[in-house]
View 1 (cartoon, rainbow, N blue to C red):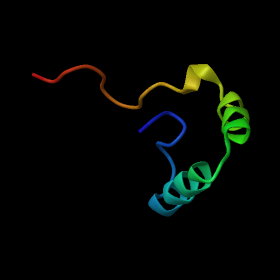
View 2: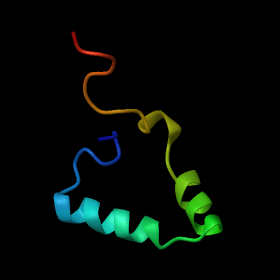
View 3: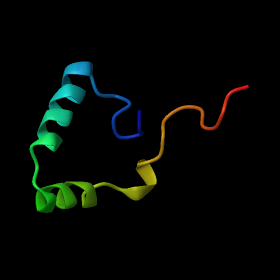
View 4: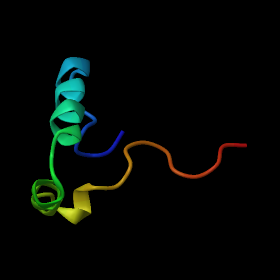
Length: 50
């Protein structure tokens, strides 16, 4: 999960994945550039758990 997707419902996440899978390179680049880089990190604990 990322900061962007942490609050999405499973059906919303599935729709987002379907939408992204159908994008061409230009549309995908535009979509990716629309996000705030500071909110693109992982959500939750990072690193290896011992």
